[in-house]
Amino acid sequence: MKDYGLILQIESGDSQQLTGLIINEQKLDSDKTFKAGESKVNCVVLDIDHEKKIVDCSERLYAVEESKKVPRK
Image 1 (cartoon, rainbow, N blue to C red):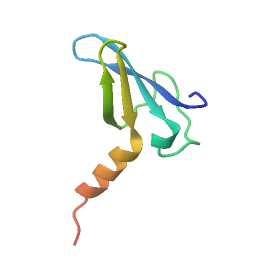
Image 2: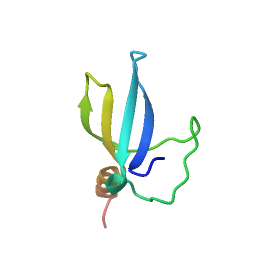
Image 3: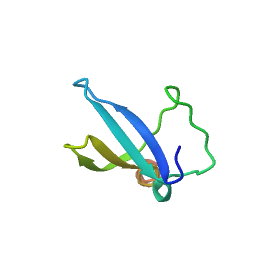
């Protein structure tokens, strides 16, 4: 956790190490506690900078997409 958001370590299938970033405006709960190596985050990828190996992510958009999947009666 940083003042500006959450920094993530993203595992890639081809053993590349990527860094993820969820800025505060894209987080669901700013009071949530994360533990390095133990926490998993569900999010949507917004952008990928292949040269810098940085992935911009959003928890908010993930939640919106998941809410659309709930069957309505």
